[in-house]
Image 1 (cartoon, rainbow, N blue to C red):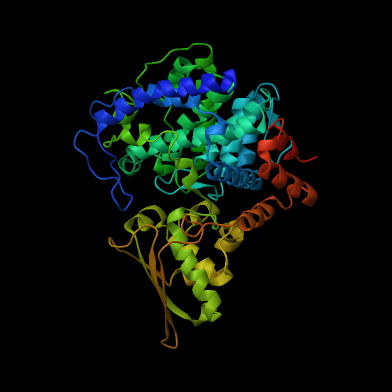
Image 2: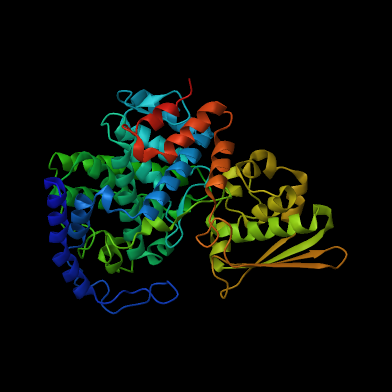
Length: 492
């Protein structure tokens, strides 16, 4: 064993008493057999040094410590993130952001994926974060509905262009950042989300700060400060859903995370308990605080391995209904004029989040169960093209939207749907979805991810370049400089 390896082992071993003490204070794992958090008396009390435990873990964790399956999921997350970021790069929202910020951007340090402009790293990270989320087609940690790669990957790819890092170090930092964001999200979800916060922004900033700090080589105390500064910058409200403002949130989380880590690297201080303190982040913005979700099992189980990828370009709660609609359409060769009505039993969250009956623009269509099901039945797909202005104004789709009847049903899980299509001849077509395609139980294959990437990048990058970018993502661990991905995603 080399001196470096011995030092890393000793450093990680030093963490174990603190982690064990935290586990002893907070009691047994709060997860029930069904995977849902169960109430625990005193879950928010005597949390121990949560911020420091997390910081110590991030500083000590090595690429070699990551299980092979976690690394593979990290690579899939990277591929998906690059695809959706390139794909969203010419949306009107991104055009506006580039136009608004270009006069004020600093030196051209980093690429905006899919575009020729180069901005300073914080503004580039912001715009790439916006671009990655604008289609609502990005990765999703289903336990919390966090889209973690937007804040994390946007931050560290921009950083890598002025602070070169190997692909191996890049992947390690990205996975650690995603782990931090999702564990912190677990500690406050669903109460924090139910209050109205957009958890991708509020938890994602921690992931961006941790990943950036990892690549900058922050020590333990500096990482504590970086997480503390991130805690001071929660961003995003659910009221923004259906507007450009929604994609602002992961973009701002990315740039705020860089901001936090850069300040901490220069010893800009913060409280040492900004996550867990009585007047800290968790107690201030949530009525639930389960700090065991943050500290237990660090380095043993990985939330980053639970990431999933969307086959449909809209809110994840719509996916079961879309899946059912496409299956029934294809199996029975349905045409819109055959349909009398479509009855759907859905989780109450579906109508809460996606109850827009008459969406006027594409971003609203992504939050309309009426449009999503109608267009899936008409076109047999729900990619970005199905949420365009063309699709929203299609007369056949518009007429069918009026025949969609969603019923809020408390007994239906968010992963489920019961659909009955009543045909004009009286025939009933039924389908129950337990887990939609794209879920952990029915994940997208590598080939499906490549097809999604290609569809998103066509017309933005040349076909040979699309293949080369995908190959770079699949082989990121072998790259001498992770910034090669950004450079290849810049159109000539």
